[in-house]
Image (cartoon, rainbow, N blue to C red):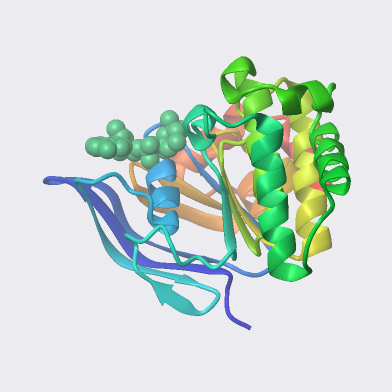
Amino acid sequence: MHPALTAQSLSITAGTTGLVHDLSFHVDPGERVALLGASGSGKSLTAAAILGSLAPGIAVAGEITLFGTARPTRTVRGRGGSVAAVYQDSLSALNPLVSVGGQLIATLRAQSRRVAGRTATRDARGTVADLLESVGIDDPQRTMRGYPAELSGGQRQRVCIALALLCQARLLIADEPTTALDVVTQARVIEVLRDYGQVSGAAILFITHDLAVAASLCDRALVLENGRLVESASMADLIGRPQHPYSRALVAAATPARDLVGATQ
Ligand SMILES: Nc1ncnc2c1ncn2[C@@H]1O[C@H](COP(=O)(O)OP(=O)(O)OP(=O)(O)O)[C@@H](O)[C@H]1O
Ligand SMILES: [Mg+2]
């Protein structure tokens, strides 16, 4: 079976400045892999390269392969519904002119048409409301009537997660999806992502600087420092025997992660 995602010798530059250097890794189907690293280490750029959404002026070399098919690192179109993303910037990820419910229902409809035919409006509203509730939105009906700018950052982030899950993608790339959330909501969202991965068999590339959160979801970890991959290990090994100095600092700063690693099984 092909990996869900392979990055081969990925390098990203802005002018003469190297931002990501010769990065190679893979994510197997059904695997949940954390991409860890300090702010500015190149996590979001890596996600953008995979998704074909790098800003103009940023150059990229190397190869991205999705489910065995190499794809240009510049094209947003043509992912064929196999990849969904939760972007770090939740405001720009949503259409400001369409109600939250409208966006979610349109996504559900598009997905339903692809796999099975139509979904009745009442069913669609109910499905979307249930999903919003599962990611910790207390009043889904009111949220669905509202517009993205009327939501808090954390609520918007959860709407983006719901949108991504509705796509039923085989690979989910989630860039800091829980960063704006309080710890209780964070735990709930992690549970929803874990369930999604387990039930659908989707692969998840989970981008974060928070080792404790990563340990509660992911089986494997990739650690970036200044755009370079400095460690690739199982989550248990990273936490129990971190090799690189940055990994050791990450583990030392997140002692509670030791207690969380059991939750990944
Ligand atoms: N459009 C751009 N032009 C030039 N440099 C950029 C651009 N986008 C990002 N960078 C630089 O590339 C580096 C990596 O940025 P990136 O957004 O990938 O970091 P990150 O690991 O996602 O950080 P954070 O945890 O803060 O989200 C940073 O030094 C950033 O300043
Ligand atoms: Mg980022």
